[in-house]
Amino acid sequence: MLANAVTGYDIIGDVHGCAETLVRLLARLGYSKRAGVYRHPQRQAVFLGDVVDRGPHIREALHLVYDMVAGGAAQMVMGNHEYNALGYTIPAPPGSGRRYLREHNERHNRLIAETLEQFANHPADWRDFLDWFLTLPLFLELPGCRVVHACWDRQLIRTFKQRFASNCVDIDFIVESAEKNSFAGQVMDRLTRGTDMRLPGDCVLHSRDGYQRHFFRTKFWARDPQTYRDVAFQPDPLPDSIADRPISSADRRKLLTYDIEEPPLFVGHYWLQGRPRPIQPNIACLDYSAVKYGRLAAYRYDGEAQLSADKFVWVYVDPPQWPGEG
Image (cartoon, rainbow, N blue to C red; front, side, top):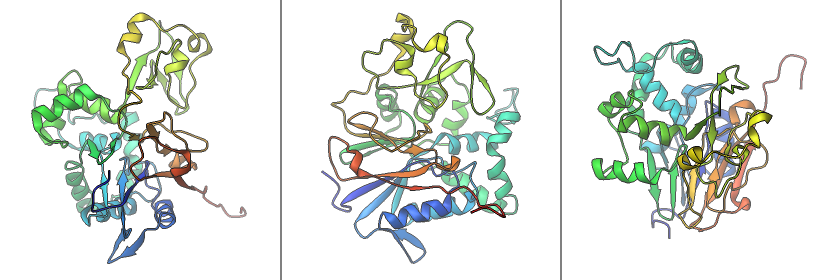
């Protein structure tokens, strides 16, 4: 059953600064701008995080989403890119050996570069959005379904709710999370970045973003997987020498499960491609690589226990037209 205030939720994947595309998707979903805020007469939007970074209109996208949330037309959970922005700008505690919680190294600088450039002449705006990021919930338990950016870890979420009686963090929790082995570090890493696994032996994955990686992202819902290919969940394929190797018993014990009897779950984060569809009868990922000229996707949730491919709505992100093209 859904809440009386709304007849359904429109759950929207990672925007990453694609504000113009978001406007087109909202229009297709039946939202219109009233008193400066995009609203639907009966439904509410739910954003899966990662509104910042990478795209051409980050500031505009943040204003649009913030106005919807502040006006009651939407909700939003924290994505790893909002979390990264907080870490990049919050000073590290004395004696930590760092200037900021998230080091200003080459990779981190590159990931946030577009955001900082687009806010260069709007520093007060940027400070206001950073303050807003601190208020974002890590997860939502809506009538009939669950929402988190990357992974629903029932044990971590249960412990978090017992300790804090909330689904939100504060600046002390963010500071603590810089220590990856702390409870805060485990929560932030798991819920906003998902699960991963070290490649067996000394194998290295050469990813499409130009980095060498020793870890790969994994499914947190795989049932009785036999090989490493069965648990991999990322755009970059595993090396052939690894993909069909049987999973070791030690690695198998590290895997999470999200049973098909549990409530429908919506996530973003994973850069999917192709035609949107459920990844399990009760799990949908809404990140379809919008900022890489894929799709900005939504799911129209109306209380169903089993998700349907027919409930996905999307718009394509058009590459920029250069002089002489198009």
